[in-house]
Each structure stands twice: as C-alpha cells, then as structure tokens.
Image (tube, rainbow, N blue to C red; front, side):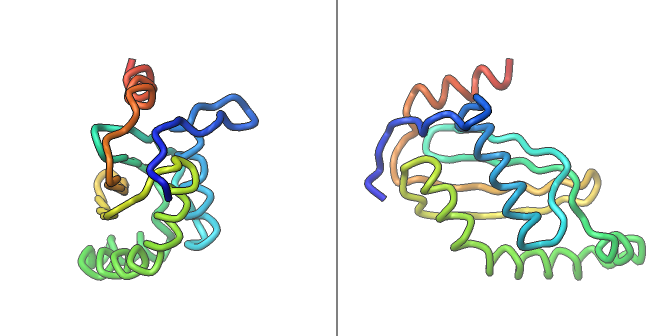
Length: 137
C-alpha cells in the first residue's frame, strides 16, 4: 500500500468509511467463523484503528464458557485470529488505502466483545479523525 491519506469513497448505501469498515469486518467474521457479531463500531485514533464488535460467540463457545473454560475459548479465538491476520489486514488496507504494520485482537466474555486493533505506518488523515468525532457525538 502507498500510505495514501485520502478517505475511501463512501459505500453504496451512503455510509462513511468507518461504517464500511464495521460492516466488512462483520461480514468477514460471518464468512470465516460461521457466525458474526451482532453489532460493530469502528474508530480512528492517531495512527490506529479500533473495531469493537459485540456478540458473536457460537453455541459451542457458550457451552464451554458455561463450563468455566474461558481459557479454552480464548486460546481457540487467538489461534483463529492468527490465521485471519492476513485477510483482516488486507481488508483494512484495501478499505483505507493505508499500510497496516501491526494487528492485535482481544476477546472479552462478559460482556461478549471482541476488539480488533490495526496500527498504520502513518497518522490518520484529519478528515477520518473527524469522522470518528462525529460517530462519538
């Protein structure tokens, strides 16, 4: 990626870049995991992107959580995220036109939230930071 600092075009339904990112991340999870989050919201801050996704644990994971096997579910999710790193970073680079230099993921169980962090090689364009500010308002 060339590190462009221009916002990607708005989606066909008029959503901004942050909305497109949220939608595409949910679709990616549904495609590869079998079940996706029920809600997602994305935020640009300085040189990184945060995608917060709510819901999405599978029935099997819920069963394991009810059996106090959080570590097992967390380990599986971490392995899954490791396998998905290339797909996720490629998606974010395509949508933003910016190079991702690192990616991290974390899952929480109560409430059911996953957080995806993408770090870029440069600072986000001020227009995209404004989009985050408008989303928080």
